[in-house]
Length: 30
Image 1: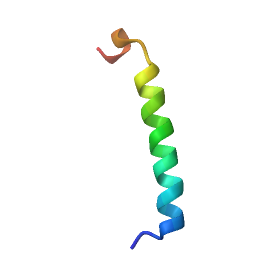
Image 2: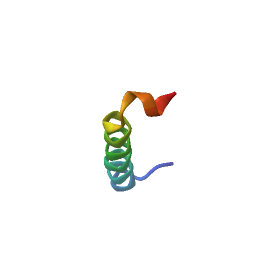
Image 3: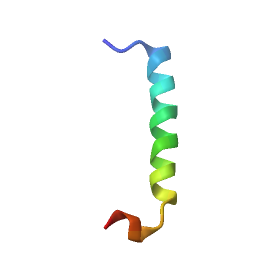
Image 4: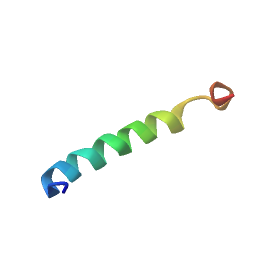
């Protein structure tokens, strides 16, 4: 089971990682 406090940290980390991916230029995806 995932502890609620750890889930909060994971969500923030995942959100930050997703934002980093979204900020990459499109051409870097290919």
